[in-house]
Length: 196
View (cartoon, one colour):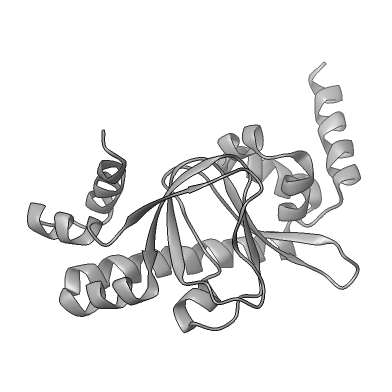
């Protein structure tokens, strides 16, 4: 399977396109490799690309006043990542996007995405559906953080994202769930204690 075949398969799961449309679409994406700990986006610089993950894991995070990291988004194979406010509005980024593993990605520029949307209502529909999924995901995250206990948030995370749990360091998972690493460690130990 070529690198771009994975993206073609993903697109077809979202919206049915002709073979010609798929080729037009994927031709706008360029391969991009990122080494572990490499930054793809940094605060103060405009995010010019959105990324589709072929291989690897990434996270988007912000740093609070006290120097604490808050993970906003995680991404593994078949997921998308960028600082979307920066990318969509071409404004300076407020987040870091960093590779947590060596990554193989496909990137599309803001200009190429605009051209695709203008060229076909199918392409515009695809990107709109991505935006809707992203909005639903963020809403679910906010509601979960407001209504569930730390233990419930962790259980929910394990159920929804077992692959992320296996691949992300504990400090990243803790910051994604809005708790300290020590508190997450305590929850995990309690969970193991109940099993034994």
